[in-house]
Image (cartoon, rainbow over all chains, first blue to last red; front, side):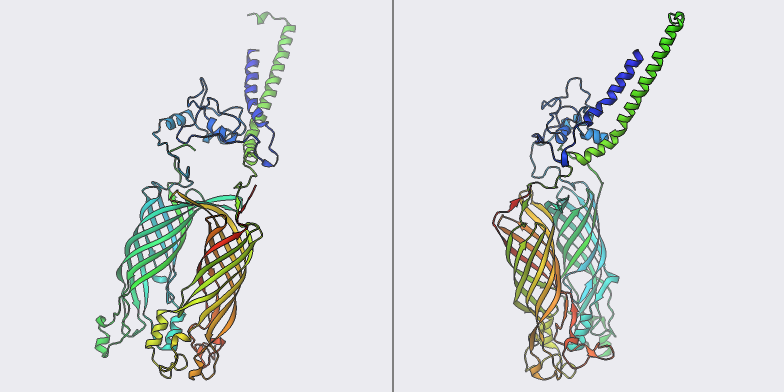
Amino acid sequence: MKQARFWLLMAAAMLVPQAALAQPKKPGGKPPAAAKPAPTAPATPPAGGAGGDLGDIDSPGAPAAGGDTGTPPAGGDTGAPATGSSGGICEIDPSACPKASDIQALSNKNVRADVYAVQQIYALRRGRVELMPYWSFSLNDQFVSHLGPGLGVNYYLTNVLAIGFNGTFHQPFNGDSDFNFQNRRASRLAVPLNEYQAAGTVNFTYVPMYGKFSGFDKFIFHYDGYIVGGVGALRTRPIAVIDPDNRKFDYDWRLAMSVGIGLRVFLNRWFAVTGEIRDYIYIEQLENTEVAATQVQQRNPDTWFGEKPLTNNVQAQIGISMFLPFSWEYRLPK
Amino acid sequence: MKQSFRSPRVWRSNGAMRTLRTGVVGALTAIGAMTAMPKAASAQEIQLTGPLAGAPSVRKLRLYRQGRFEIAPGIGQTLLDEYNRTTFVTLRLQYNVFDWLGLGVYGGFGALNLSTDLADKVDATAPRNSRTAANIPPKNGPKYTEQVGKLKYMAAPQITFSPFRGKLALFQKLFVDTDLYVHGGVAFVGVEERKDCTNCTQLSTFTNETRTAIAPTFGLGLTLYTHGLVSVNIEYRAFPFSWNRGGFDSKGAPPDASFPDNKIDKEDRTFKFNQMVGLSVGFSLPSAPKLSD
């Protein structure tokens, strides 16, 4: 009989979750009438036993055992999921259920009692490395399109400030527009053209904007807007169009400043789609539009170079963004 | 020791008890197993029917568009122009049937046509000789910049699709509601370009005429709702079609019509992916948006 009592007790214990699951389903998935969010203190660790705080989220009508005293209930096993609750996080995903050690660690944290406009930002950036491969194309050069793949790497010193670099490889992708030929043939006037080999800058990125979108009223995705500025170099050369028989140009370095704005749409906490507009400002070296009088002079490279105008190379960069490490721990509980 | 002296009846009784106990334990174990088994499934069930399941992603959403009429004056600037840049003064009239769908008309006129540096250089430095006689007016004639193609007006009935609604925090201080939309329609574009001619070296042929080009138009935009009544809108628009931007005789001769034929006609129009960016301020009526459930 002793064993029978044991087994009956075990069976009863196994039946307990059934009582929790036996709650009537909400018709149409509507929230319960008593579903009023309990006030939470962001700077205060979760009160009561494990699952208590989360129980408030999932079943706001049922206050957590232990109340707001900040101490676990006497004799309560805070490491166990809250029994008798209706579909709390502990039942849905036991691995996500806070343990007593978690609560202890949180309570020992030195927190600032500030309330932020956005609590627990969806994708934190501080201390993470961002890899940003992209495809770049020119927005303001109607004569030669400067396409090319690129890669940006940023390290976020804070949640809104990063330092990094980016580089773009243009050389095989420069496209001399058909319009140049049409213009030369019609007006007998050649426009000096230049092509790029590569561009690279060291940047600071500042992220002042953060937002979220509801898509089709079904899902939510987060995005941020940033500004970027830096200094670096471009390697460019003139395309010989004035005197192509004699002139042959090599790529050379140009000091460049860059400023830009960008938008990053997060598809999850570490993967995003990015769009950026960047202006690389530099002094370009153009081909000389005049041809020297003699053959010897025409072959002298000193006669090949012309004006050096300040040039804005405005590029659009479309790409993806990956943040490492993939996950993190929030400093404050939600 | 006692058990060893049990009577067979007692033994039978104990056997029955053992059978009963085994049955009860078995039954309870089975019930327990059954109880335990649905646990995983019920977790999924809870995910589907929990307090937020089936609920919209946003409650009490301000419906800035639905059932409202919008008037949005603004400006637009063409991009990647070869010979002439156009600044449009624009107006968008739109009625939003739903929060995600609007019908309207986008229009504008070219308030400012500015020559590019290339057009100025062609005018100033291009040689005037027999090779350019059909393309560049003589020095004593009109300026070259007058013959280049210009955009004069645009009217585009269009559909606006706004699938994304959201909000934006700036410096964690300033918050604005936003939406992201795409639009598409048909554009009727007034194009001023060099008029057709067959003897195109005559001075009188270096004049323009206006025609209406029909082109698809599409793009996307971002609206910032600063107020129930007022919004700010940034938009990109493409309206690709063929036109003769330089006023040149560049095509038309056989064998494949890619050589000059000393005539200006529609053969000389070349395809251009025309683009512009616009900024407008929208006023929506009624002035207060409704709220969703």
